[in-house]
Image (cartoon, rainbow, N blue to C red; front, top):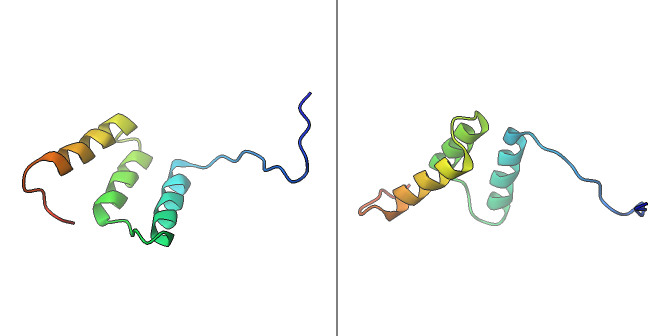
Length: 71
């Protein structure tokens, strides 16, 4: 039987929206504010409109095509 000390942290579970908010906040605290396009991408993932592979493909397409706009 696994015994945990009182100081060990318990696993937590977040909703997709909470996870996205935490990621945006952590990036902001690290000095990397989230652009509107990142917030939109996360919101679309939160709503189930995109899965991780589709989101990664959109990011890759955006930053690998010539002359992509700076946002």
